[in-house]
Image (cartoon, rainbow, N blue to C red):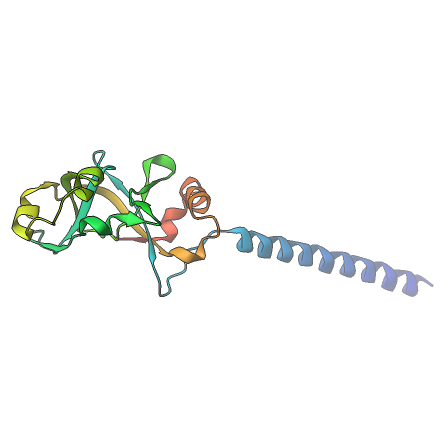
Length: 173
């Protein structure tokens, strides 16, 4: 009788322990599923950045690594994103989400988006270069992976920022 009682008690403890471990595993899996993680696969990338000064309204261009020439600039008709002027989206803690395709070699022109779309033609590249107001404007820039991975892009990125998640993104500077 003592043997049967002892076996029953051991079985009860063992079953409680396995249920408890299973609950912990499920909670860990749920945390991982709800965690926002960058995915680096083909497609438009999610570039989040901060600038030294407010260049929100200024048109960005990309320079070469030496910052001696412009390697990418938009035409006036290219400064639209989803049918609106491609201002960056404002995020938590003064971060911005790029809508133009900037990189770590970005520079900002003295032209605002409003002024730029009114140009009948793009100035030649040498003239554009003289319109650069800051060729080293960034304090931080991150690639947070494929843009289509985020279900609610702005809210997801804000959560990532607020939870110190930018450390999971690729720092570009």
